[in-house]
Image (tube, rainbow, N blue to C red):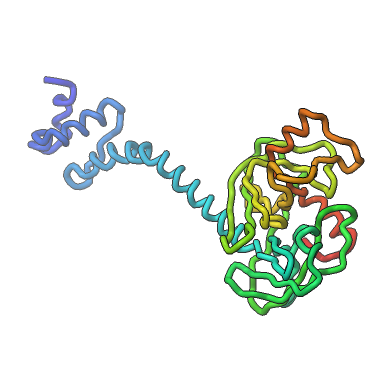
Length: 282
């Protein structure tokens, strides 16, 4: 008689004739799980199976949580990102403030620079709003403010702390590429944080693929906070955007590294100026 059979007195006669019952009973003896006999064998099977199911589901639960987190980030990006366009311009922007029915949108100065006509903003619900640029100076940074009014309550971005960013940190970015392609959402990571800014305030290099038209769109951390503003895509076909703000040229090796990244302006550059100008942005 084996060790399991010696425990037969604790079970009803005939229960161990079923090989599956005997299997779980033996398992409970080996791992020192005390069978709980509430109604027949149900208590025994329940006690034995629960830890196995829990262990088997851990990886699947992690994958589900990750998928839900990514969907949440996508939705957050979609809701706070707007399309800005005029007769001669096209770009993206970030809703950063609401006061009554008036919304404030942060974008790049170069998105608004080439147009003297009317601007329009398209929000996440597909509505088109007339917009007006604000005469706010952001020193020498490639930043601008444009406003629109609506009775609809739109999501407003949460601004993070770009000073806490680290190279290798995962980020997502969004914007509207030129043409009717809809919102583009990309995942990547911070690849390079410069000790001093490039011309126009660009300081954060990241691996996300950015296209023409996504300028002014948000770069977010995994908490859904805006930590930078898109502005320069990787491998530009013309021009030489890689010049430090003090006029110094990057070394040859550093210049080559810079070309491999998209470039963004840290949100703290905007926040500091907005605070000083009392723009009311939180």
